[in-house]
Length: 461
Image (cartoon, rainbow, N blue to C red; front, side):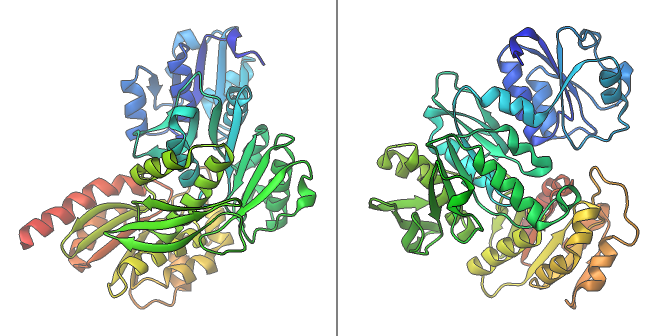
């Protein structure tokens, strides 16, 4: 497909993190851009401020007239869009050129050396770190908002590399053919699409086969990956501090909240690295990002300088209140293993403090498939408040709800709370550490909860 034959692009689901990055790229490249999303958000506000027209009503009348000429309009859609969506069906019935987000990403990245980060957890943090480490050498399409650049896209037309988050959902990453690939995790997830853990593994093996001949795969030590999955490429491993890996950290110390460490590579030991964001899993992600940058032949001294400045990703172990005895952290965790990593990191930082976790289950199918694991992970907290389940693209499944999770949990202090009552409930509890977790619309509570906790702290002084 030749993108130059189009001068307008319409996005169905423009407010998604991956879709909005593509919309920004097309807008910057001079295309006329518009789109639809279900609800306004901080992302859609920013897109509108950048000159992109967005409607929040799916009716055909809401589509601008300039985007109803199929000869020069490309329609990009997210696989999460409901099949009965009126606008989507209009474009389909009228014979417009429709492509999935993943296909558009593949088209935009095929002309550069790709660095693709895949994995059921960690891919956003690792790809964002790589993009920051190599900012002057890459363009990037990210699955989160980099706190360093306040964006999810880097547009650098002359750069030799493009960094992309390779999403396994709906097998989207199979449109990519990277030069360097990183795989962070291969846990069971998206079973509504795959059906089994083995099917997920098979999709990752297909992704590995698509790595450019003579390219490099970097994967977390211990993943079920073998040389047979692509014998033409170099295969290297990374780990937090396991010396059986090709890349790992050693001599790890914490000074004033910063991780100091030596990076061990296949050819050298490089002391003097500093990471300024908390959480051991963030340090492991940093090792993965440095591994990719090392393979891309980036200067080690430059990498040290950039890593120390790295601020992380919004909604990834993000501190919002750090005042006296009051801590408030927000995290995107929406899978049992992500919840485990988040809570373990809090325990590591504050070993003797009570943790109140607020969790919004995301998707009926995921909640059903991992109900027992969710309950076990949440039981590691001192108190848990569950918000009503966020369905996203799914219809209800009988018997699956936040109340179901609550019954499975062994924790003494547990409850379900409506979104609109949460801030009041948190203030009543007077807990010193609060963490909100989830991938739905729980982020809408971050600002009011932060303001309420800060006000409470100021009054207590």
